[in-house]
Image (cartoon, rainbow, N blue to C red; front, side, top):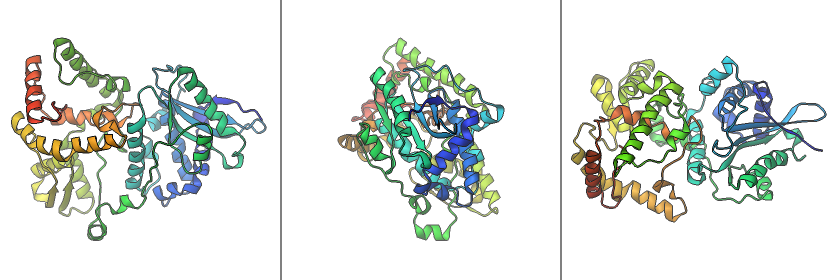
Length: 420
């Protein structure tokens, strides 16, 4: 039987959500994410989440209908960079659908296992950072109604994408479940890595003894991850400019890139961009503390969590019981002191060593910049934080060249500074 591939629209979302939940039902992930939700509630959430994909001009949401009944029985999401094929047929969404596209997680059933949700998203994001380039196509999802599996519907949706990849001479990246793996191998894909999601690890991150004595509460920072992530134009993020310019032309390109960021991202996100600083995060923690009974706070800060903990202590010192920071650093220090503190661990113990080791195992991502593949990419979610947290005096070419030489002296292996 011949099947026709069509673009899906907003009205198709409930049917796509049903296919999604039923086809992956055997994986058992959704009941763990939403332990008290009915299947209807999960499907309603999936339907709202689909609006995020409809609103993305690089995401092509396709469907296949049963010729006899007219019902949608399979669908796929193909991510195609606009540099390969500029999209002209983005679906027109209703006002409610546009709201869901901006923040679909607000419609998620509660309670929600946010630790597991975050671990799953992180697993996908890390794999994509390793293997995707800005020119690759990606099969984001492929699902067929269980009653119609084995009839060639999945293959039809695959051929839609592979024909375009052949035409443009580009690669296709995808993630496969164990059930779908044989299908993709049959169509010519080869595995590059096998990954596993430890569904229990997010729940016991700090160990059973700590978990038994304390309620573990993780704050989803504003504009990052599952907390209504900021939106920006991926073309901005993917512009490659030198952070340490050697001439005025390169300096102008650097200034223009971040000037565009200062305009485009707030326009796409709204006022949230101006409130992602550590003081705002500290106030969020204080609100959570009060909401859980106004007891003294026990705080563990790792990496950027150090600055948030430091800021909380500066603003609410009377509310702290214990404060543990793994590597505190004074933002107000001078440049030489900052580089002196940072250089030894950066080169000998942490980032460079990890990056070089990963590169020997076939993963060079630690030695390269990440690419943004959508308007909600994690690759630029930290940019507003950096802009708000650090003092940014007006830069001159001579001043930046001095900093570059200083960083190269303090960090002899890396031979340059970073954008912090």
